[in-house]
Every structure is written in structure tokens, then in C-alpha cells.
Length: 321
Image 1 (tube, one colour):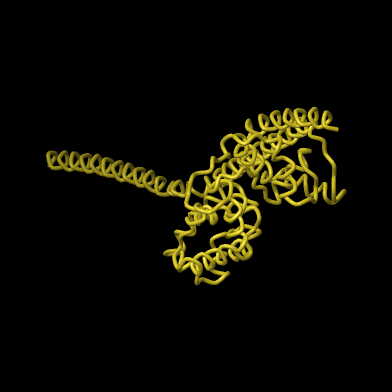
Image 2: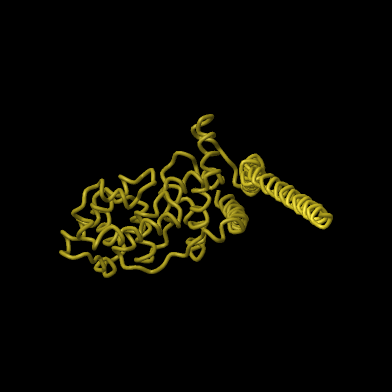
């Protein structure tokens, strides 16, 4: 049995290495390295991050400082008001509920918004103190214990648990903590942040979420093998690229159609726009005036000639007399 376990672990480690290489090619720009923060701020960020992308968590965290003057104002706010921090999240009310409980517990325990005393406790005592915070999730506790206290843990939430089950690195339906415990001895300590970050990016990919939902409809506990994970990832990413090309092509086609319609409308409007051309009668009037002027001049010339002839005849008659 011991020999079987020894051969099994390197096989899973190789699968994890290949999976992470595939994920890194796609999610390199989305992955975030956790920054060092005070204990309270780390707990708040963990609440923002659970079952969300890194970008969404950063937006929620920054919105707290925008919507509230300080933590005390947030502490006395209603759940409805706090939910505005996590707007568009399907877990907005739960996050708001946990956020307010955290602030209330820390303030009533220390009469200030400071939880740095946790760092002076033993690992076991620190874990117990975090366990006393009402409604705080196991993910937020594990995340804080890893990034503040330095314990080697894999902070997994529900979406990450489902993604790992799809990759063949966990079991569908079990708790995230059991999945993390099973992987703790396989994932290297210096690779834990990279592992969790890339799995988070995959877990919140809309295409994978749709795949997981469709699989759950057919089988509540589908079984996948880690050895086929890279191939299935390539199919998933190819499908994503195909959809993007299709949507881009559709957008270009729609733009062309819009441009054609606009051109047709413009062409249809051109005759109406040439209304000034209706001034041609004025040109005709001018031509008619010129013709009338010419006739008048001709009449005047004829009258002058007639007058000259009459004058000559009169002169001749006078001379005869």
C-alpha cells in the first residue's frame, strides 16, 4: 500500500504541473499575487474574494472606502446598504452579512478596528479566535491563516472545489476543506499561491461554469480523471476562442449591415437635400428677363431707325418746299 501511494503521488504532481502550465498560458493576465495586509483588512479582502474573480474582489474592496467614511460607519449600516458594496454579486447579501459581523466582533472585542493581536498567538489559538467570529466562512479563516499567520493551507471556496473536481483533482460534492486536505501533501508550499490563483481564474470562467451546470443536470456527481484534464482544458479553451471569433465576426457583420443601412438612408435623403435645386425657376426667370431685355433693346433700336427715317423724310419734304 505504501509503494502504491508513493507511485500515485508523483503521478498527480505531474498532472498538476501540466494543468498549471495550461492554465497559466490562458490566465496569466488575470492571476494576482496576494499582497501583505493587516489582519482585519486581509479578512475583509477574503470576504470580497470568496467565489469571485480577483478583479471583482478588488472592485468590492475599493468600493468600501468609496461608499463609507470609515469602518465604523460601515459597522452601523444596514445589510441593504452594505450590499451596495457587492452589487452584481450573486452572494451580495451573504458577503454584506459577514462583513458587518466581522466589524462588529472586532470592535466589541478590542474597541478599535485592529486585529493585529492575532499575530502574537499560537497557530492553534489564532485559529480558535477566528472561529469565534460569527458567520465567518472557512475560506476566509484559511485565507487569513495562510497569508497572515503563515500556515501551509490551501484556501478553497465552493467554485474552486467544483473546478478541481472537474480537473480530476477532487471529488464533486465534498467540502472544500476535504479537497484542500487531500491536495495539501501534493501541492508544494511555494506553489500554493500560484495553484490557488490559477484554479480561481478557471473556476470563475463563465464557460466552465456553464459546463459544470450542464453536467450537474445529467449527473450530480460526475467523475473526471486528472490524466485527461489538459486535453479537456484545450477543448474548453478552443470553444471559448471559437465563440469569441463568432461574436467578433457577428459584430463586424452587424456593423457592415448598419453601415449599409446608413448609406441607403443617406442616399434616400439626398434628393430631399437638393431642395435648393428647385430654384431653377428663378434661373428661368433670369433668362426670361434677359430675353425681355433683348426684345426691349431691339424695339428701341427699331424705333430709333424709324425715327431716323421719319426725320430724313421730313427733311426732304422741307427741302422741296
